[in-house]
Image 1 (cartoon, rainbow, N blue to C red):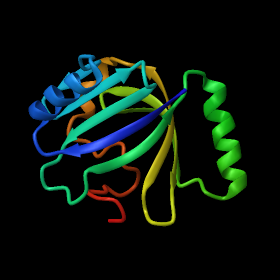
Image 2 (image 1 turned 30 degrees about the horizontal axis):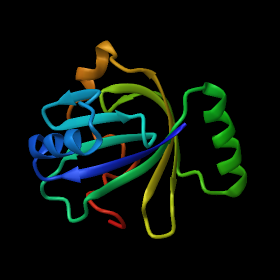
Image 3 (image 1 turned 180 degrees about the vertical axis):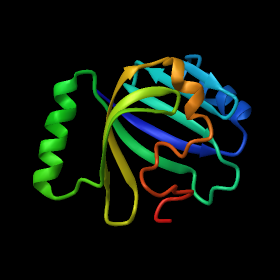
Length: 144
């Protein structure tokens, strides 16, 4: 399990250069307007979305899990707590196929618990331009 930090960046190339230096690792996945880093220490999945018009730099937060049972456990726990916002299974988005449970905290910040089931699906090109990683409404900034 590792935390995910998803950021809106103004210039994806500059951001990739900076975060490669900061964490000492190259991006795990890179597209024209997207990059993600798998950082071993500290355990972090850093996701960058080129979104120069975003008012806030924070896009969303997440918890990446490795086992399907961990998604089911998170869904049960968040459902019991009454804070599930959305559930997506076998969703191709952000250049991967994933199972997700979304929750929205009181000030509007989105959290996702997710498991990647296919890191490089053939249908990933179909997800380009699709509103993703934001739930039912595209959030350009926290609390939007």
